[in-house]
Length: 155
Length: 204
Length: 213
Image 1 (cartoon, each protein chain N blue to C red):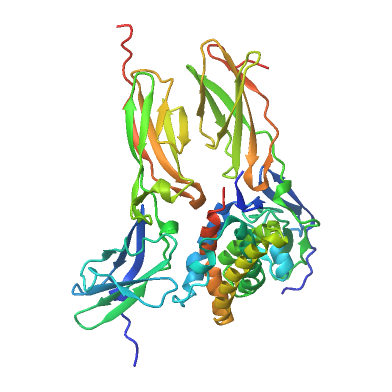
Image 2: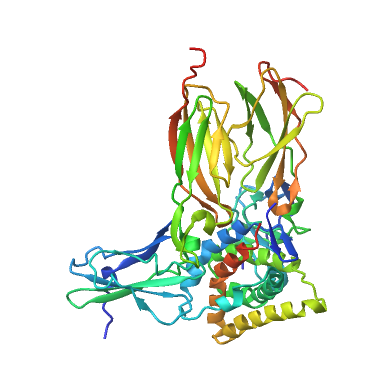
């Protein structure tokens, strides 16, 4: 079947097309609310040239942030039922992926996990420089950037 | 909220076959009146992170029948909580919640229905349309001792498809099972069906 | 000062993308004057500065080719159009956020169908795109989409189909009846992006079998 392979971390049971379908259903609505076109949170420095091994650490940090900070508060404001259904698909599938990402915590992996942490902090710092609501809307609108990056690890 | 005087729907259960999920319950009866039901769901994420959030079902908010096709609402392989309430005008019942959360990986997968025919030397198979989540693993072999079994993944649904060009005078047998990627499970295999190039479909 | 409603000067500003040819298009309003000129700017999502598109400044037609300017597949873009009427009215409208990877549609493949006596050969030709690699050479669709594959269907006397498919470019449907007409359709699929091209269709007739004549 189809699966993700983030270095040593393997994730089954998630159909990437279903995630794209869910995001496409709300993309224009969500991105239209983000009028700060001069700021991109998931910049090249965060996602480019990430090694396979590092990808598991980085994605786990990003997904946990999305689940705890971005999605958690976004839905309260998303009255539109079309968004709620798509949101639920994304959130629950991100939850499945995050729960299956168990990167190694061994000492020799410290430099790789540290590199992933620095990349995540770049993203988090950019997030914190914005007003919280604008930051959540922007991060939510950048799920397509995250999905595009995840494509590379989908087999 | 209307005052809860209507009895809440009882005996909620989910019947799931081949990734089609049907929520059912016992109807609330008020003689001479039409009762409407509202169905809502919550994935594992919502129940853990925002338990006050319930999402109206795509097709049953409201519905008159005491059942609801929730297939389009179940879009992740996680446990889903489901609840139903009845309404009659401004009267509203309490919510009834499914006793155990439903996960689509518990669906029952049945052997797929297939039709094996031939056209000249062409072995042709037609498979039922079970939706985009299904792949069909078609095994076919020449009916003779030591024959090798060939397996082909067929995705086209509901259209007769050429499987193999047969040798004259030989008999070929076919069986098929399904594979559902998002839950990583196979169905049982169907019964084998055989055809002979010049003869009729042979009973096993 | 009541803002003048100039929305009828300009509407439907959007990208249309096919095989990574990215064209910006727009419409004038239903009753806007014909003496309106348009100027186009674009920028990368995340950058501050808008860049004027050379060749699309003060133009009177309603489209602008931004293929080169929006050719980086890892970037997302915005474009905007400013309409200016002779009477001094102006309006500016911006596109949605655009990613050619997400938005481009796939054109039908280019195929050569070669009939033989008991088979039909189909050769799929690679599709070049305007997207360039680091060294400047143009990428094909297969280069851009690693999971791209071709799907070939041959309709046999309206009752069933023969299917072939894969990543290679050379296919042959065998075991066919001589001197018979078949309908072939060939499509491009990119599963992870849920992209599917319109079909290339060829109607061919197998050659007569002259072995016994």
